Image (cartoon, rainbow, N blue to C red; front, side, top):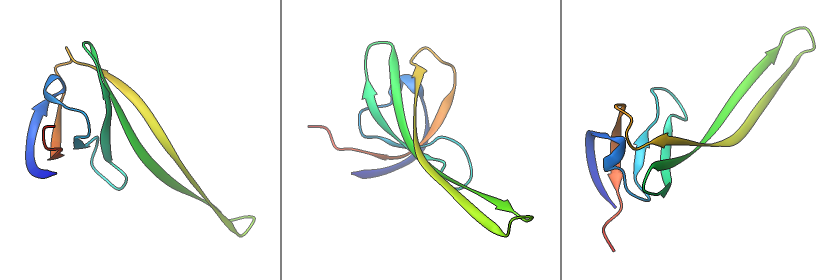
Length: 85
């Protein structure tokens, strides 16, 4: 892997790239699949709920997979790119 640290368009993403999906904790995602029209992103998340009346805290963890069109005007921040094979 090599550090890139720049903003790129969705169409420029490659398999295995590490990107910032949004600011904040658990905002980092990895490009899981790339085809001619879509880019699939995988990211983990965690959320804690505080139940003050019951005296407990419940933590939810999971994974999210979502797809972005390559034609999207949206740009993402690219942290790392896998070396070409």
